Image (cartoon, rainbow, N blue to C red; front, side, top):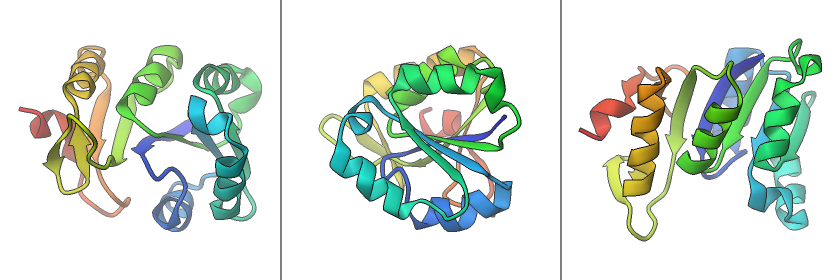
Length: 157
């Protein structure tokens, strides 16, 4: 069962390992990203950052979708991490159980604008956000579990 789908361009780091994992009782962490799944150096680095004692997978987007949709994954409490709005949109489209996406951190890039202190979005991101909203997906921004939820829709108005 997916307990949280999070967009965070840093993927696995202290905030994830030491706040989200224990707060949600996570026993399986999945990083879903096509680029990272093919990069042995990044996979090794992320493996070093993962919390001890939990299952850890790095998969391309379609492979992550297949893994989570497999009934064998249902007993696990999964934290699914995407690097971008584009990746999260693909995951939402392929995994019916995802009804909410947490926006953690998306750094500025060419063509993006800051909509909060930790989230920069492009026009393509905003179009994907609007699509997820029309599908009834809750989109909320929080850095850590103890923060109050902030509607992503309010950030893009």
